[in-house]
Length: 108
Image (cartoon, rainbow, N blue to C red; front, side):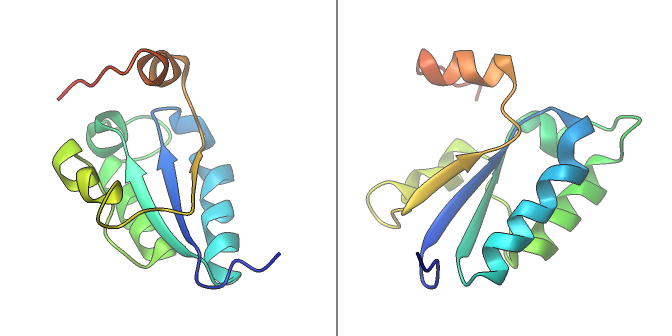
């Protein structure tokens, strides 16, 4: 199956220790011709950890995907009706985020 021309959302949640393993997957999708739309949680955008600074992770994700990250509900809203995705990948997916998805909860 060709990914050329497909729009793939790629969501990252706050499991900071896995980003080094996950970002190459974004690179593979982009390399296969997909338009990768990175979506990050507040924790990804704002938390510095022993695994790296949030600004550095965001810069790396944006460079790899070739576009700015979506980091708010307002910025994500057009993905539904106006700019639909063909697929959405969420990796890593923390238990906290999984629970919020299952119960349709948002923080902001």
